[in-house]
Image 1: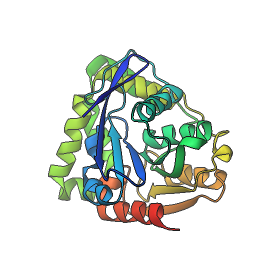
Image 2: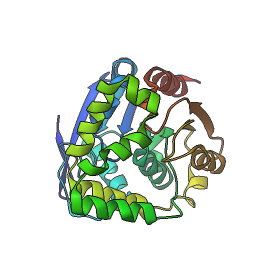
Image 3: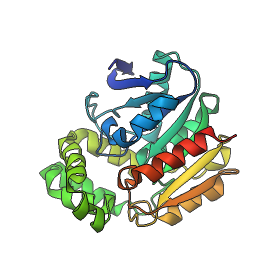
Image 4: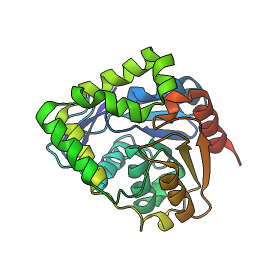
Length: 260
């Protein structure tokens, strides 16, 4: 896996799948690594060249001082594409990955073909919960909030039925560097992509989770309604829909990216 420099921050990047043909870039949620996408990789790498990366402050990428911004996280993506000499990609981002995707598609439209925005938002009107979470993490780390985060990420039924899968995600969460988690949380709290949405010309699919309390259906429906010709698919999941409903998520992604 190469390390790619973005404004002094070395980012951990993986390129797998087909050597030629369409390229798909995946961008994961706050508090996870590129391995969040493992359920999708067998299918996606058969059809696409797939780029995954650890966001700054996460996984094996370097940790830079907080705060971060959506623009900064978006410029990290452009640095990766430039380093790999890739002109244009499809994008699939979940949660903050979808927030970064909105910025990218509006700001650098020539670099992005089809756009998938999963379990995401364009704006959080009340930053109080983010501020409280940041203070809790700053004083006590991530372990004390892990149960509440996982309760928002997965339905109770899934948490009870798929304990091994939930434990993998818990491990990603608690191993996330505190500075990286706080920096990205500040980027989310300070985000306002609402005026960018009408500028997005990419063919867009929004994926929402029926039981998602973090980025509920109305947030995803707002995005769909503001992007020209966007469509929305609703999955029977909570926030991490690609893990809770991996087959449906993968089928939805592949179908959207391959339809004429």
